[in-house]
Length: 350
Image (cartoon, rainbow, N blue to C red):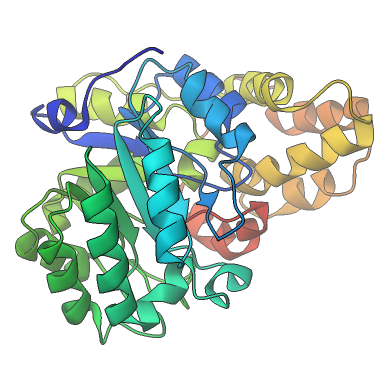
């Protein structure tokens, strides 16, 4: 098995750590391979392993670890609420070349939180405390957590922070919204800053990091050690490179319509299985276009049109209508904000 840079070594760097967020049914092996071609993140987080008494490690997600094409370290994320099962899965995952084990305490998808998993666990701080204690004993490599600010509101965030601090986490990622806020509304940067001040471990900020300017603003407002970026990376695969260019004072690459069109072609080739029906391939691409289309054409007409095509030729003919030009694509973060609740249907960004 190939080994990669350790998480502690990565955190010793001077530059902010850039992390590709886990997004269920999106950030798989094929997507990672494509992201690496565009500059990629410093750290990659797997889709979550669903953990329960009868679960086994998902082979599809394991492939992202065992065949990691990025050259960068990988964090294996788990989600569940049964302590013996989580301990078992954590021990199994440590047999693979991972930089850390992560517990998902942030997924806002109703089918998840209704089962008291993901963000649903934030309603029960005592349960969180017990789970973290058991996992910290079982995990001999870095142990990380991804959380939100609370379930209905932020009232118990101050109760959660000491729990996180007590269990010697190696990294805490904070999405600056509650579970019920999902991806809507403003990110509460002040609460991420509170976590930075309270935690003995580094904190990564997550939520609406949709542009170079937003990345810089988030780091300034929160003091976070790094940024986790999810939906914006689907829409703009150059974002990690652009952030690095901005911090080095270099000219920032501005993709044209044709650059985005080439990316969509590459994305289709990367994620669509040629052995399945063409209509299924096109339907899969619509999941990604939920994010991409708003950055291309902010009135929503492109997305409206793309949702109605059924064949590969029609799909790319439509994309060319909107993108076969040499003008820069602004990737307006406000367009991303408008699209967020709609694009959530693309599957379980945590």
